[in-house]
Image 1: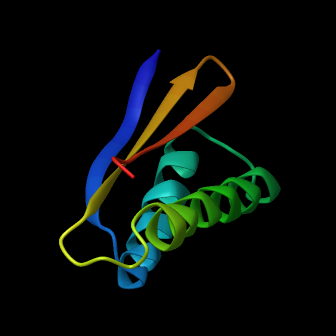
Image 2: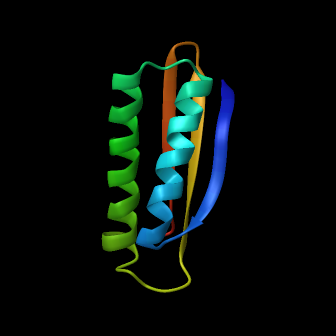
Amino acid sequence: MRLLSEQSFPARTESLATVRALVRQACQQAAGDDEFTEALVLAVNEACMNVIQHAYQFAEGEQFHVRLLQDERIIHAQVLDNG
């Protein structure tokens, strides 16, 4: 499995634009098509928003981590938190 990208973010809604850019860049690096890329961007964005809203309840000082991996033609997206 090949690591495409990995980054930690403050658990704030302002981080979501950077998360979306990170996912788009990783998909382009992995040669994903536009439809797949936008679907993955939407799914990861929603997962991160759920962490911010439900796991951390918008608390200050929390973080989450996004890791994107490629296994042949499959891209794995992991959102890790402590919520």
